[in-house]
Length: 202
Image (cartoon, rainbow, N blue to C red):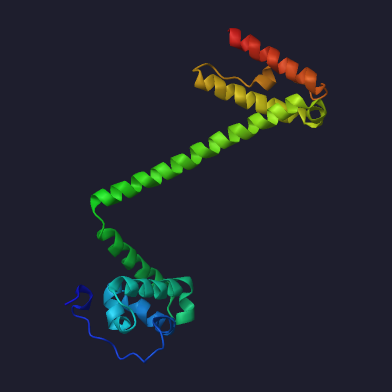
């Protein structure tokens, strides 16, 4: 006997032309039966084995009914708190089936994904900043249109982070170099570079 059929007696369900039609029509009832039965058991209960070849196909059909109800419980006359309760039970059963090794692996993968995302964003940001600075360096006209305070802020951030990487003290170079908003961009950059060199000698 197939494991999903144990202790499962088929319900008296109207005939439907396809499994999809059955799922659409019976989604609410299917969802409620997931409170105490597995996806495969509910598949047999609703007679999906008459339409589909194996348990995997039935689980997929039941999953569709499950998601339809979760997306809009009220459409199927199911209270949101009831839907949330069943959702919690289904999720807990899924976790209980996983081995400790599998759970640990999934946690590690999550950490790797987050770390990769953050490191990738950091590297891309650095690349774009470098391109922008190189462009300004090659185009005096574009440089004159840049706001002085923005260049000073960027120089300060980059200097501070560089100091941290090298294990040295950090101070905001834009402030130390006494950048004046009335300065010509070339003069301001020169002042910042002078202060950077002075701090670097300390």
